[in-house]
Length: 147
Image (cartoon, rainbow, N blue to C red; front, top):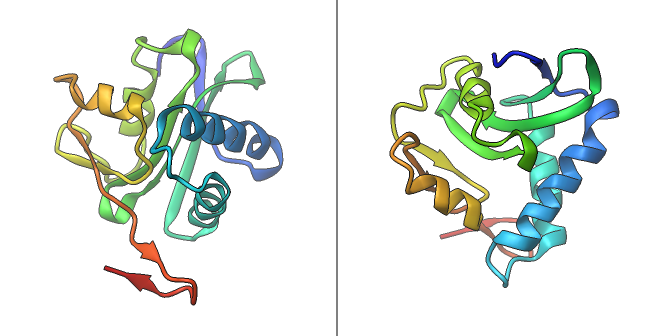
């Protein structure tokens, strides 16, 4: 890990407010304009609470209440749900270290990302990351998934 930072497991009580605020802001500013933000937030929260999902947070090594980045992934399928790095902490290798710390994840291979933003598209054009958008299944009003 980059000096001055540490990776910790997601703690809902300690991290949820910041994690969901950064998710919402990123989706509001950089996702499809037709996105239902409230539905995306609920969907992300449900993913994060699912036993197959692992979420990690990067904090300052000397202050666990100073957050730098977070990512949520389904490691069994090597799928990133969403990843965020605070602007002052970008381009330092923090996200690479964070994603590499997920068991079974190998970001040197093509890696699907579920919640896609303009920033994700920009990162995908960088030769160091091989990410691509994996659209979420659409849900019908009855809760069933459609094609």
